[in-house]
Length: 364
Image 1 (cartoon, rainbow, N blue to C red):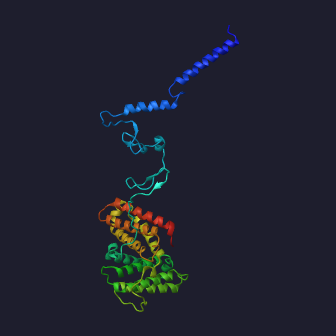
Image 2 (image 1 turned 135 degrees about the vertical axis):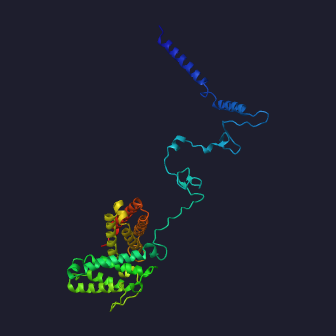
Image 3 (image 1 turned 90 degrees about the horizontal axis):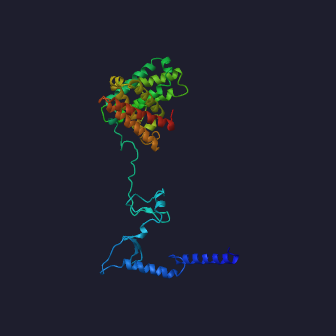
């Protein structure tokens, strides 16, 4: 049996032995400076070149300018935390690759050394300069539409009762007639009544003004409207009616026709196309009528983009009008080609433009 004194000596001996072992381990205890000096000396011996030559190694070393390198590549190009950098999903701005843009150490962006200019989109505008109405509607199509309007008005003006039932319709027909008369005045083609087109325009607007008034439904208004209509018929038949209104030949659309009535004319045209060219058979059967309708559609759409008329100061409105005109022209070309699929696809574009426009600029 070992007494208390003996156990104390034994414990002390064990503790001393452990301390000696720990001090003997490399890097622990002893002279730290000597250990580091010996380690550097050993590395220096291993990296010393032979026969005065130079030896490239993959180990990290210091160049003459004090920069650390790995295989000749400066050490400071490597990320300190590669995994952390790879997981960083922040957008690096300053330009596409090769323009000098990038991220600085502080996370701020540096301006690009060179700038690649993005081409600005061309604004949507009407036909450059003076619209070429001859490209939108032929003389035959224009005269055909004028004749159709004349026949329709004739059935509505046959007596007071027919007129009274049509007071909501006549302003649309009258406005379209006035508009087409002015297009004939501007047209490059030969129209026999072109020199008197401004009289037709003025007389048609007289019809519109009376039937749009609060007294449209009285007999006196019918007489006035009928008088203007008969004078129009005389001019179309190459006659010289008496007491024509005094009016200047030149006029802007905004000076004589309301956009709302032309909009209603477009709505009716769109409805007619749906009902009469909705299938390939009806498309083939009524292609010629469809072309005339589409020419009117394109011409009215073009007028909406002329200065001072409609909402042409608003870019989205001009875009829709431009789209309707181009779609109508595409449909017009599809008729002689018997290309029903192209015709139907363009009609959808017209419908979309009309719906978008009415959602913002509904007029009348």
